Structure formats: C-alpha cells, structure tokens
Image (cartoon, rainbow, N blue to C red; front, side):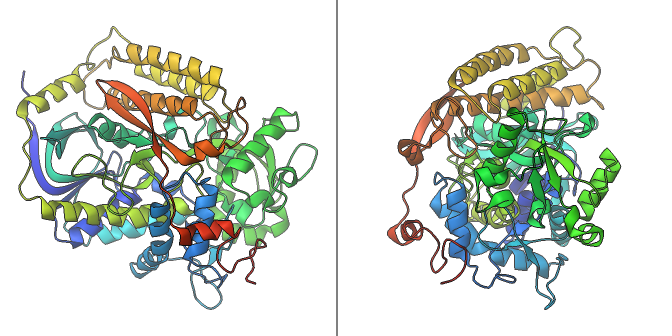
Length: 584
C-alpha cells in the first residue's frame, strides 16, 4: 500500500545539524542556495557540544612563533603520515580564519591579559594552540553557529531520521526521512547533499559519544556508492570516567592535562615518562591511551582499572575558573571534588579518523552531488587525531562542503528525478519491523555488537581476534535482517534502534576488515601480532566499497607530499622550530 508523504524541494540538503552541518548550511545559504538541514536530535543538541577543550588554530596569540606550517607538521606527524597532505595543508592554513570568523559572529572566548583569544596547550601540539571557552568550547561553537543560522533562510527539520539517498543516473537526487515523533515520512528532493552526521562511537559500549553517534550518514552514503577510507582507525581518548559504572566512558577533557594535570599509576609513579619522556601527559592520544592500558594490564591500575589524574596542585580557584565543567561533572556524577583529590580515568572510544573519502578542497565524494564534512569524512587525521583539531575541522571543511555543493549545483542545472517506486519501496522496508513481535530484539543485537567490537577490535588487536570478530559480525548481520519493533511507529525507540543498528553493523564490518588488512601498529591501530610501524603500510590507505551488497576492501596510495612540504619532516621539525619547540 502506498503511503502519502510530505514532499520538499531544495537546492542543497544538509543531513546533520552539528557544527559541520550548520557551517555548511551557512556557506550554502550565503551563496544564494535554498537550503534545508535535517537533524536527528534537536537543534543545538549535536554531539559537537561534547568537544570541551578547545579549537586548534595557529593564531599565535600566546606563542607568537606558531604558524600554519607547525600546525601542519603536528597534524601529519600525529596522523603517522597516512593523512591526505592536501587536506592537512588546507586545514592548517584556514583554521585561524574560521576561528576569528566565529569570534566575529559572537563567540565568547577566554582572553589573554591583552584581550586576545587565549590558547592552551594540548597533547602533541608544538605550541599552545587551542582557543577555548573554559572547558565548554564545543557548546559555545554550536551556540554561535545556531544564532548565525537563524539569520539566514535555512529551513531546519528537527528530530528527523534520513534512511536512504536516491540517485538519478548516478547523480545524487535527494533523500527520504521520517519524523521520530510519529513516524511520518518526508521526501527531500535536492540538487546536492552534504553528509555531516558525525561519528559512530556507539558501536562500542564504553564511549564518550552520545546516543546520536551511530554512523547514519556514512552508512547512507556508503549504500549510495560512496567510498569509506581508514575505517580501522578508531580513537580511544585516554581519559574517560571509569567510576561509578553508570558514567563509564564519559569524557574527561584533555584540557585537564593541558592545564597541568598529572597521570599516576597505583604506585604513585608518573608513568608517562616511560612512554614519552619529552611530552609526558601531553603526548598524542594513541600513546597516552596505550600507556594507561599497559599500566592497568601490568597490575598498576587504579581500583577500577584506570589511572589517577591529579590537578589538585593547581588550586581550587584556578580549577573552577579554567575547568568549571569538569569540576561540576565529577561532583554531580561521582561525588568527587577534583580540587581536593585525584580521580580515576581510562581509555574510552571517542572519535573515528576514518570515514567517507572526500576531495581535499571541495569535500566531494565519488558520487556526483554528494559531499561530506566533519567526523564522518576522512583524510585529515590519518591514524590519530590531535586534540582540538576536530572543532577546527568542522569549521574549515563545513564551509568548504557548503561551498563545494554550491559550486556543483551552479554547474549542474535542473532538479534530478526521484523514482516514486523507489521511495515507496524504501518506506515499506523501513516500516517492515513495526508492530511485529516475533523476531530479533534490536537492543539485544546492539548490545551483542558492542561486545564483539570491544572483545575483538578494541584498543589492542590481533589477527585471530579480528578474524573471529568479522565472523561474529557477519552472523549478527544475518540476524539483524529479522529485527522487530513491537508497537506502532509513534514514539517507538525500538524502531529507531533498528535503523541505527543496521548502520552500525555495516560500519563495524568495514572497521574490522580494515584492521585485518593493516598488518602493523600505527596510531590507533595497535596489533599485538604486528607491533611495529612498517614502511610499506605508510604508503597506503585501505578503501572500502559496497559491491553487490558485499563490503570489499582495496588499497589506495597515500598522496605524496611535494618537496617543500617533505622538507619540514626531513629537518625533524617545522621551519625554524627546533625539536625543543623553540625558535632558533
């Protein structure tokens, strides 16, 4: 039976209402396009608000020697050189402009005594580079973009889930979605689509990510023919809460270490000296996460399997001023006063470096008219993301995705056609589980997926574990085809979970297949059976394509840097910057 659905037509459709999506929408609207934004949650509630410590940009307000070259150098080195150098170059050059633009739009940053934007140190950044608003930077970024978008003619659709992208002769044509409140469907015809739906941390149980992070956009684009890249690179943030159990995984911002917090094991030893004696607690996230993990495995962990993080030496007034969110978070959730006592932290799934393969300049995928930006897009971070680079990423490439989509529609006149039969078939597919009692429970499938990923594709990996994990995921994939959602489609979270789980299983398979193929340890990929970083794997990225319904994995050469950029690394440091981080 055909269903009557509301219908909309736009020049550009943005799927995702976080920082990247809003910035893309602003760029497209300012270019004169008719734009709509679809948000799975409420406007202003995006996962961007969980990015606390700051936004990385070489403003040079605190360390005048900082510049784009050093930021580029730090980003490539932290990514273990499988990043796309073009993406990193564009990013490091444009990040300062995007941050200053945000300030002009009303963002209220912490200030230096001279009135400039304050910048704090962060792990593996050569200079103090993170512009911040206490430890609530992501919230201020979203607030500012939200206020800005209200000055445009962008239409925002809240609490709506897209389920399929449509093509017309290979070109993107739009999407179908349903309202989460009552299950009504809506069709959005569009000349171009930007995917900005964030990451997929909910594949894992212990995660800093909120409920929205189920990889919807990346899975939609993948099914429409877009390629995924670097999926094996999943970042474990070193410091998530570990106690009490109900808050396990909630982020403890890197800003705590940036403001002087010290990591110690159960013996009181400042153990990061063993793993990175130069940068200590401010080493890159992959190194610190493995350090905490190794200490716990060696029996030197805290009572609940983590490490102690201590900021008490900075004094109550300083802590409450610079880290107000962390102070309140621990008081409210753990009854711990971080101004008086150390607290337990441990690795938590936080971010994905992998995602949709996009052009460094336009953010275009390989599907004409389909673009992607933010965490769901790959290329910038390589094997490990630097803290603070995520917020500048969404600003830089959110704008570029909006501009890229605008340029595309200007060169491709006319609205693509969407086949009505395809739309009705998709609606029937999405509705199939509704009202059924006999079948697989989507919550049980999700819980099992999280167990498989934790046990077989966690912080440490082996070939045998990964192969077994893949086998279990494929079994779960078959079971998931029979998921059910008893009740009606109105106010039915089980129905939403059916959609989420299908997306997460698809991405989990790509993660594990990539991890199997990368037979080395590099950044977030830690193979116990291949503990060394190998030169041959530094020359390739692993790319995934969906062919006849099957996930296929290929290699793609890492773009080779031109000589002038290679020289930065041959010198051992960015131009004019000695290994100590000081100008010579």
